[in-house]
Each structure stands twice: as structure tokens, then as C-alpha cells.
Image 1 (cartoon, rainbow, N blue to C red):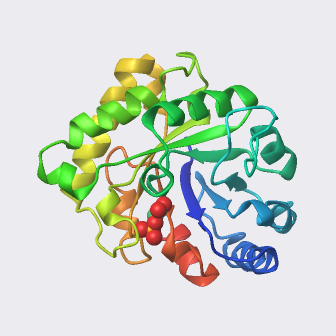
Image 2 (image 1 turned 30 degrees about the horizontal axis):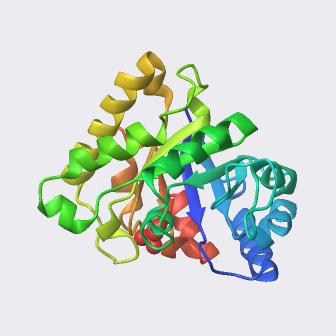
Length: 251
Ligand code: PGA
């Protein structure tokens, strides 16, 4: 299983800026990436095709999208279908990012519908889970993760190819705050996510990647990546500059 370094650009960068940053990143990383690593860029919808162009021919670079709607087509103003993303060159998409859950109001049930539909449509899906600070303080870490994971994979076929379903543990209190979860907190959460996946998917759970996200930076990336059950990182703020993200990817 390849270690995944995913750059979630959120609502940043015009298409031209995204293309330029992607091209810079390819220049900085190509030929230097350690074996067994892959890099994914998740730009906004309008930048997907230009970034796909910039990544063309770059070994171990993938394109992902940040969101999609779980229907093939129809009267869903403002939404984008998995088929449209695949056509633009994306092979993966996020589902259940905390900003979609907590800013845009997505429910556990919708995230579950999206995860299953995205996979069925041919996308790989990165299902994001994580607790808010008040939930952690109330001792609800495991119950929140269990609820989000069970609902998230509710309709996913139990024989899904394990490389197509990626989990991302992103404690909400560590996203964009500069506050990173400590090694003990990451180990505990990731071991719990792995055990849930094993209960649900059996042996193939060991080949599913679990990413950590939340204030990953060049100076903490290698320590985080080395932890048990951490198979990559999902990076927001520190992925926006090619130089900074290249130092995470090459760490
Ligand atoms: P951050 O964001 O790296 O800026 O904390 C991570 C994410 O939201 O995926």
C-alpha cells in the first residue's frame, strides 16, 4: 500500500494559480519521491482540468476532488456528479470533510450515501471522520468515530478493493488551528479506526489507508507518518505553497 500525501486546497486558487502550483510541485518532487509514496492534489472544481494537465505524465501523482453529489445527473443546482469528476481527470474524491459536515450541514447519512455512490461510480473515496473539541472533552472520541464510520460505510460493498476506500482521521480542533494531535492521540484514534474497519471489512482492512489530517507541516510530517496505522496525511494550509508541501512529501 502506497503512503498517500494529499493536498486539500479547499476554496483557494484560481485555475491559473492551481495549474502553476501543481506544475511547480511536480518540478520539485519528480525523481525525488521515495518508493511507495504517492501525491494527490485536490483543487477546486474549476481547477480540476488544468491541474490534470499539469500532472500529465508525472509518476505517482493523482488528482482528487473535494466533493460531489450522489446522483448521476439531474435537477441538483450547483452540484457536480462523480462522472463529471472522472471525466475531468479525478480518480478520488473526499466525502465527509469536517467543513462539509459542520459548515455546510452534511449529515452522517448523506456522507454514507455519497461514499457508496462515489465508489460505485468508479471514484476512490477518502472518507473523513473526526471529533469536535467538546466531544473529545466529553470522552466521546470513540463513539463519534464509530458513528461516523458505521454511517459512512453503511452501503459500501464488504468486498470493496481496499485501495479504493481511504479513511482520514481529522480531529476538528486540529484543522487550520496550528494545533496538532499528539502521537498518543493519533495512535489511539488510528488504532480504533483500524479496528472498526477490521470488524466491518475483515482482513482487507489491513490494506485500507488511514490518513491523519490537522495542521500537518514540514516539521511534524515525518514523525506523524512514522506512527503505527498512519498511511499518509491530508494537508490543508501547508499544501498551498509548492515549496512547503514538497518538504512534507519528501520528508
Ligand atoms: P489543515 O487542514 O492542514 O489546514 O489543518 C487539513 C484539512 O482540513 O484537510
